Figure 1: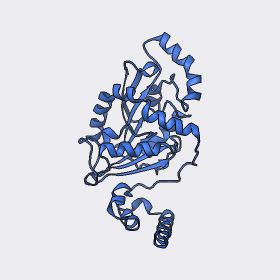
Figure 2: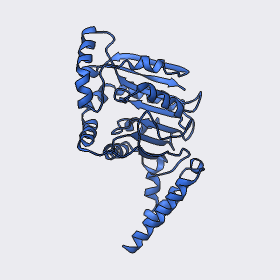
Figure 3: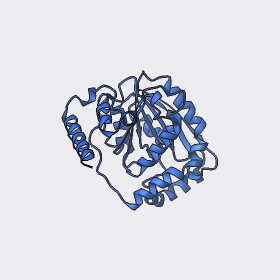
Figure 4: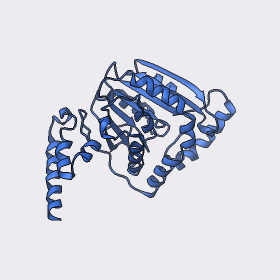
Length: 286
C-alpha cells in the first residue's frame, strides 16, 4: 500500500511539472507516457495513453447527473439504426479523408459521444500512429467510447495510435490554434447551443490550408414542406428531452457560410430513421 501511494505521489508531481511547462505541446509522441507507464505497470498503459505533439488545454467543468448518464446510454444504444443507415456514406468519407492526411495525423473528434466513428478510424484504410483527441461535455460517454475504441482495434499496440478523451464543448475546444490535421464532427451540430461559434472553433483548431473537416449531420427536410413543418413542431420538446438536439437546423448552409476555403457536401435522405432521415455529409478544407 505504501509503495502504491508513493508511486501515485510521484506521478502527480510529474504531471504537475509537465502541466506548467510551456513546451508541453512539443513533447515527442510517447515521450511522457513511457515514464508514466513505469509507475503504473509498464507498456500497456503507454500504448493506451500516449502523449503527442498537441497539448490539451483545461477541461470543461465536470457536470455529473442522472440526465447525463441517461443521455450517454441513449447515445450508445439508441442510434444504431441511424449509424447503420449512414454507414456507406461515412465509410466513403473517411476513406477520402485518410488519403488527404499527413503521416502521424492529429485527429480531433468533436462530440465524440460513444465513439461511433471508431469503426472507421480502426479500419485498415486508416493511417497508423494517429493521435486521436475526443472532446465531449458528458463524462459518462467515456466508458462507451473506450469500449468502442477497443472493439475497433484502435488501441492495439501495433497500430501505434493514442486516444485521449477530454471534457469540453464545441464552442470552446480545449486544443491549441492550428493543431489538428482533421476534425471529425458527426451528429454534434444538431445539439450545440451556437453552431456558428462551434464552426469557428473547428476552423481555429485546424491547420490552415491543409486541415480537413468531416461532417455528417441530420437536418431539416429540403424536399417535403409538410415533413419540415412536423420537424419544426417537434423540435422544442425534443431539445428538452434529448440534450439539446434540434430537428430543424439547416446545417449545410451554416457550414457553407462559416468561412472554410472549400466545402463539398451533399443533402440526402435515409430510410426508417424518422425525423433524422434528412442528412448532410461532406468534407471541408480550412
